[in-house]
Image (cartoon, rainbow, N blue to C red; front, top):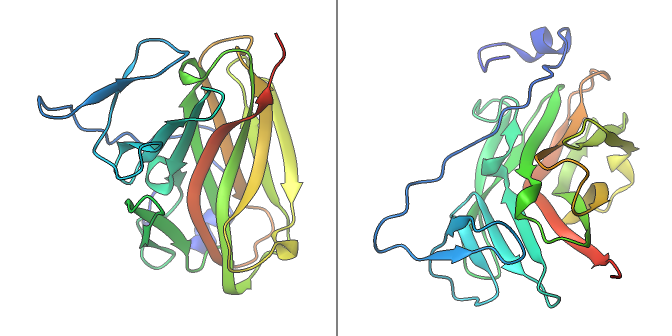
Length: 228
């Protein structure tokens, strides 16, 4: 479904079953340091200098990686790393600069007006720490005027073996003006089949025009340490 389609046309069509992964990572130069992910396969991740020693950007505006107090890998995928339908059409969405507490400048996606909400992404579970209970959650904000959220949004997490966790969330009941987490699901590593997990936040059936949603990204973090 391209950006040239109108919202009215899109609301009458079926949502695409294929998820698109946004890839925009540059080749590391000789002067760019790399860091190896602990507790995972020796995959090099491009990093840039950061004032916060505990937070190491994977790629500016795309995401970050850090290790928690239990030495578990943690990830944040920013909006630029997600697939958002019509995000490049300025009639429906706009990119807004946001300065993180680590002084990192990122971009968040602000919804201006759509009736077809579709936000999705993917992540490879091989980067996660073993023996750990992980939670996947969307990080969003609702800012006034926020309207069109009478119909609950569908939150889904799909595992490499095809099993899934699904839920419905009523955003009308959520607090305004601050970042909140909307859990998509949880799982223990290692998963039964290594590969990519897919997560999505959608509302395409209600036909209500929506406004006021700001999408920061998706966190993949441990909930608690699984006993040996």
